[in-house]
Length: 205
Image (cartoon, rainbow, N blue to C red):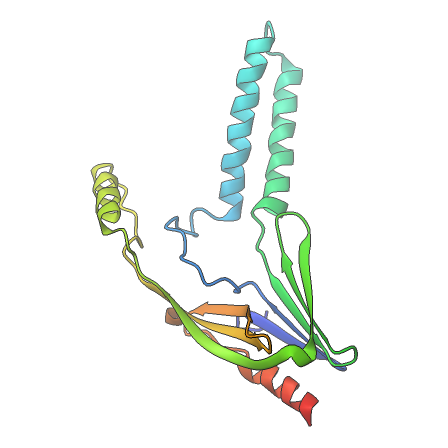
């Protein structure tokens, strides 16, 4: 990504390629990303499966020998690598505006593989900048969780926080919208609206 930006735009001939990992306007998890990153979460999953494997092995075997420990350790390595690379990897969205064949390809990475959608370039009516706001609606539940967490000396931050996003969408001629970018307003995100509009406007001249 470009320095200070959460997206990347690149022009290759008659193509504009837009890539970002910030394409979902949704409430952030209360789990702190500094602690619950993909590596730590992968370790937790790997450890849980290894404990389960150890218990099952102890139940079905007369005794646990070296080969059992080796296989459990091998399971930990495989699960850790697999989950950190595929299960908890950063998802991204890629949009390719192609003037040559008059198409727009929107690709979203998923748990397994990618999901690609193709629409005509002429179906884009406008590039729309909007906003979306999340306000906590279960105050009683938040009060209860905060009370329990304080009793255990582990206050959970962010439960009462409102979150507001600035969004960028492609408005289509059929009235639908395709969300392609979302950034939290408090982060003062740069919006790639000019790059995309200029590319589309040049097409119309």
